[in-house]
Length: 110
Image 1: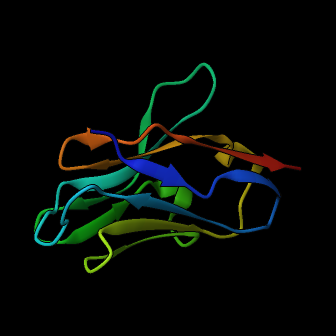
Image 2: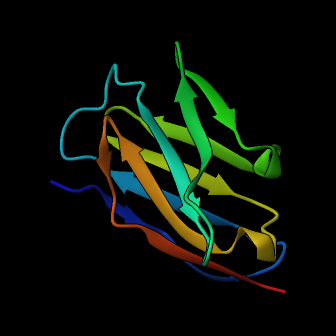
């Protein structure tokens, strides 16, 4: 079973995208989730993830620009990305309770 991530695409610097990740079952009460990204030639890195009692942590590089949210009724998690920069270009992956999505490409042009 894989997660279905979507919402990636090509956007100009300064633009916005919202990524979505639909889980196959209820995410209510699950705190092991987050978004990660992997740029070409680099290791996969965490972008936004829930730590502890539903506390969201963000990578320093995206603080103030990205926002993680969840809809427990629809079993979907989101990553709202604003003020995108070329260095945000990567394949973005969602992870929920140990399951990973296939990844969605985000490309930010300068």
